[in-house]
Image 1: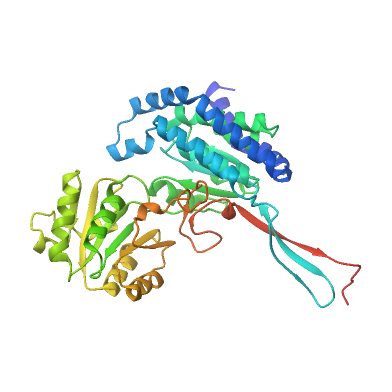
Image 2: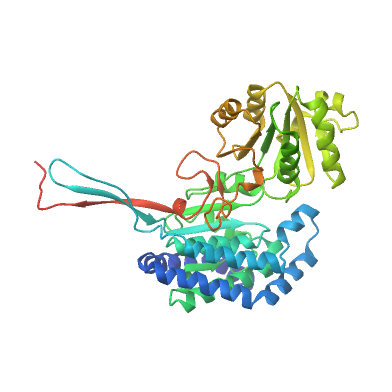
Length: 423
């Protein structure tokens, strides 16, 4: 057998073997006491802190090889503060109530049978992600707490960083006496591992892709395993005529530029015609001062003539960079029409002091998350009180918005009798 054929067979065997080991380990993890799983998370947080210099050194190696845009570089970059945030995130997850074994509902039938619906782990979760190395820690932490085993396949951009983070997570499991194979990482960067995860029906119970549109669309198109995902984060901020101008300026600057490369960043500003002549020039000046570029419709360019003209495709583009699309609209229904046409059902925001208009907007969008007088960048599991998130879901079933502990459980029915037989 040639060396190349043997190597191909090893790659093909890697994910199924990992998934079988994960399935056996997940049973032990699901039945472990909550305190044991919490101890693993605290130990993993300590390991992240102890290995901070090693993590940053590995991250510097990944950054040295990176050649993408500044916004994507920011997704890859780790700092001492971001490593600490990962550790704190694990501790926050540990402090949350145990999601496993919760009685979701119970009732008694006329024949005396007691029926209850009880939360249980999903089983084995596969996470396919690209450049953000903190995803590995967040996903592993949420999986451990919710009693799920997880298999991680990170992107080549962050491979060295991800390996050290994964070692910290398995150190936490080891310290708590839990199987280390509850958290596994694909052994190398071979893309065949992605195909194996997509085909792992019966071995992996749920796939969560986190990355660019092409990755997510491939997973949704080819997977033989249920998928929880969003393809794009085409988020909108709508400034209504009754908005407080200073609040609107603060919110849009944060929503666009706090971290322009994340999926919760606002990509399109919608602004009412009644307020645009006075407020839009101020917003443009604010954002230009910190390096933002623009794509604007004709009505916006009549107010600020030197804005770059937008084509229709610009409003369907997730920039993930310091670029903002701008459209002038005629009220809340016009804004909602724009969102329906171009949005991706991720996150939308309205800025207004008019409660009736806000309610119309909140009820009128079909997106997973909708906000009133707040930055779209709050669409985040940590900000929602979930400790962290394993991804954002924009589908209609099982989970929507930031996916935390509760969304990583399913349920079983328990039926308790006293000898009843069915007539």
